[in-house]
Image (tube, rainbow, N blue to C red; front, side):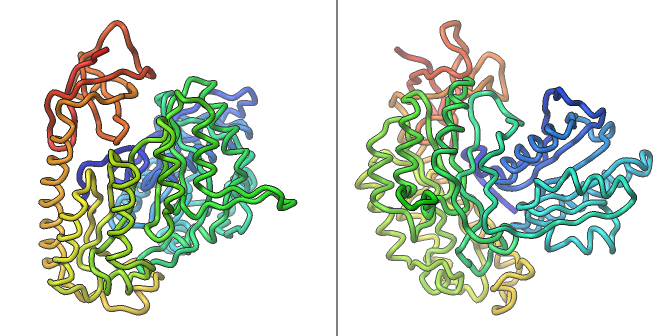
Length: 472
């Protein structure tokens, strides 16, 4: 997996697993829990749900897996190298378990169902395997392992949204937080495993989403990211059918929590994003002018065999609508090179699409076949690896040019920035994100602190980072 210019936490597939920490609970049972997450923002959000469920059962988390009684790894099946990382990490956990036989090792999330037999029986790396819809069953599954048994629950649900669970905010800076608004996916993109690992799409009660946003704002958070595999297909209705809420309406409801609460969302699907959503973004200053709109390929035939359900022209028209309705909106994307049967001319169509949009950021991958997907069953992975890699390098090189171009366009402009903390390189500088999701670096000052909004005059840039000074 190769990526460039990662715009924010909500698409942090490059991040290695992170220890998630939680304060001691009142009903401490004396056992320590360690959770490590890989993949998309939804996995990190799910880890917060798991921590909350087990906190209620008396578990206290630790940042050191060697002192943990229970070690969970929350997995991703989207890219092949994610599986490689997980397997390598499980071997490290197994080595620790050899020194502490009472340690329980478990696999959560998207990889659980597909690889449960390998993890449990063949490789004997883990004791418990739990799918994304079965986290409420964790205390029971842990009890089974305590009794000397292996434990598995990978059943998918048509109803589970965890709407009633207040997530423990792990990996939190106290400023930005995820809010899951839906689970699962009904799209059947031929390369994707998500419909099989996360089940059918279901939307969360709109009022529970708003309540979570209100609670976060009251607790000092100043930015929320609404999460879903395809947020534009969010659709909730009350049980009596008297109230219906689509994504544009939900965006407005959350934006109205407070003008000081920034609202982001991920991910949009080109076939579903509506002008109503775009007009809602344009209407509210606190809904960020940033849309992640995965194109995957710039060629209509490739899009058809990917089962993306839109063609090149449709995508370009959606981009034109964004530019027309939200002129200052930044757009990022996902691109796959070397998909089954992709010709050189079709690859050139992807490059020309990049020239048309000039994305601010992009996540770029060469195609890797995922077992069980429609593509693995119907198509031959027939593009040589060296050709995939060469095409990927061409995409990356072009994106570097476009990212730098978009960053240069911000020079001389004043950006409203939410301060997240110190810059990674210097305690003399703060960092935060602009409305368009650029990382902005500027000097520390006595008049402002993390969690504050400041206006920053952009004076120079790197490829995708803005550098400037605070102005009134």
